Length: 367
Image (cartoon, rainbow, N blue to C red; front, side, top):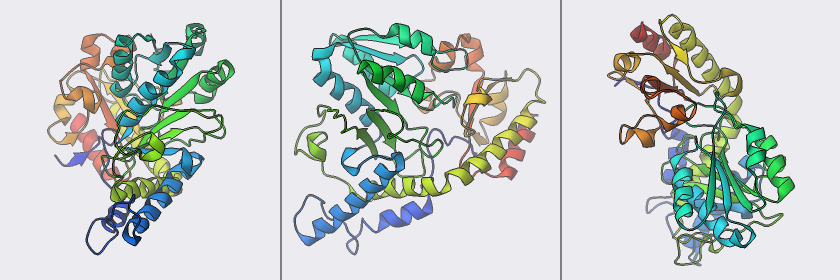
């Protein structure tokens, strides 16, 4: 396996991020519990505070609006379960899409068992939310809408401004899973009225096992803790904070801000080059709508293509979560594709260290 084109599943840690993290692990570093009041602990707390500022700056939020979690999956669970529990007196209806990540869909299914009603909207043929259908689905008892910013299989970018216009006008909470959009698309919560937003480090060249949930303070949004024991993170998420992980998240997002334009331009060139080579393959179909997607993800389908590549190229035939059980992509099925068509699909995802030479090699393998 010599070529890695599965950056949407996870990214390697940027060496600059790893170097920063090492300063918070060893006896000669800042390793203490940031909740401790001694000088060691206060040094660790300062590192956590700085990282919190970096994460907040990434989405134009206030540091006090950032709650650290173990990743986007926990952040999604905390947002959905934690919010609807506190707001259920206003209603028990949730709206999401059939193409959301399982860390949104499965909490929604869990909430249905708790007496909540969930509407799972079909996407348009290109994977985008049908705003008209969305508006029609809103009810008087709708309390929360959860929509992914960038789809992890297709790369399509949802129009958050149009969605937020609907939710804000009706006083409905809007949760956004931004795990895939971080470092790819600008996120500004001062311009778009998002109430809850999930992030993680390992999709943006940071470490696995750390993420964050943005919880709006003006107007105030509240979530009920799902993990109890210590009252950390303003009482919303218990557990000893891990400075090395948190510093890694902050540094990864800090670098992403500085290098987003350069990364996107580099990756756009890689995707375009691969597409030019793939169009020569008979029977190839492109699942990703290039007009409304990030260049980092390219989903295509062609009989036998995966077999040509999987022995020497790291690619996905669905999201990483679905690959665990070999399931056909439910995202592509939601677009109206047959099971056979969905089985023929592969997702290329490019990153900071993908090279033109690697793309040329993949093109050779495909033809």
